[in-house]
Image 1 (cartoon, one colour):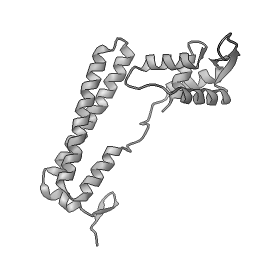
Image 2 (cartoon, helix red, strand yellow; image 1 turned 120 degrees about the vertical axis):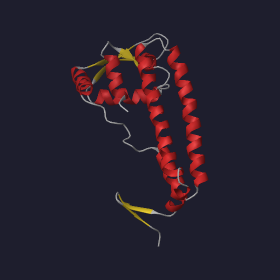
Image 3 (cartoon, rainbow, N blue to C red; image 1 turned 45 degrees about the vertical axis):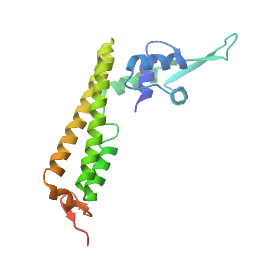
Image 4 (tube, rainbow, N blue to C red; image 1 turned 180 degrees about the vertical axis):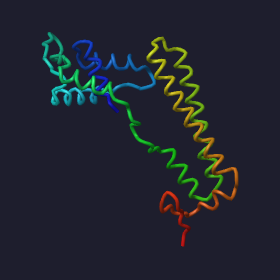
Length: 194
């Protein structure tokens, strides 16, 4: 997840320090992203500094420890432009914990296990849709609204996959039973157990 690019984007508006960047990030992306861990943010800032993307300067404070203020460099601006100019591939490809659960349930040969896995996921996703709808109604920032809309579309796609899985695995009771113990050997072949 390219948080370092988001940090560069925030610094492109002017110098800032850790907690100010944390607050600006959380405000910019809204509640759907979740809080940014300050320790992780400082690791990102250290890496950006080592890579020459940002520079830092210590500012003495009377009562508190020195404040480190970060500023984007020309190299950082170039990296930010490069990132903005390219398409974004899916961050995790198509690896998904739920798909692994469906696979395990289908290979169990037990239709009730498949039904339970799909039902639990549907309940979770519908609850997630309700939460996102509530957050979207409250969002005053149009960019946060767009992020929440994107999250909603992802959840809707996941619900469509649950529907697809039900049709493929549960419309004929014999389908799941025939998958018990089947070991896939290639994209076009299935090998029955010996």
